[in-house]
Structures are given as structure tokens and as C-alpha cells.
Image (cartoon, rainbow, N blue to C red; front, side, top):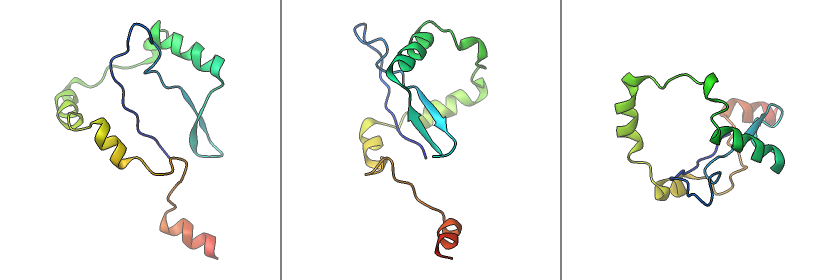
Length: 101
């Protein structure tokens, strides 16, 4: 399961507004929010570049292609493709078949 987000340039008043922190829950197979104090701590780490040392560079040979594709993603498009019930999942045919048995 995933989710769509639209990020815009942060304002000086809300430096953490575009930082979304989630943890992966193996049992639920979903990204879940953290408790607010942990979310703030991770957001501060992002703003302070605490995690950058563990990141690799984006492959430069793919950057132009990604920019050309992502240029067509807009808040209106995201609203159109967002599920009506964000927590809902679609089961594959094999899983549905197994559930019937």
C-alpha cells in the first residue's frame, strides 16, 4: 500500500510542513505515522541534514528523464488518482481465490 503526496517549497514559518515521516509496519503492510514527538525529531534531523551521509546521489543519467516525466504530476492529477479510501487495499486475484477456499 502506498500514498501520494504533493510537496511544495517550504515557508519560513513552517520549515517542517513538507517533511512526512512514516514507519513501515510489516504486519499491516503499510506506512504508519509516528508519535508526534518522534515525527518532530526526525523532521528536525531532515532540516539539519543528519541523514544525508547515508544517502547516495541520484543517478545523473536519469535526471532529465525523471524531470520530463514528473513535470506532468500536479496536485489536480494526484487528487484524481488518490484512492477514495486511502486505507483500502486491492487484493490480487490469487489472494482473493485463496480467501474463497
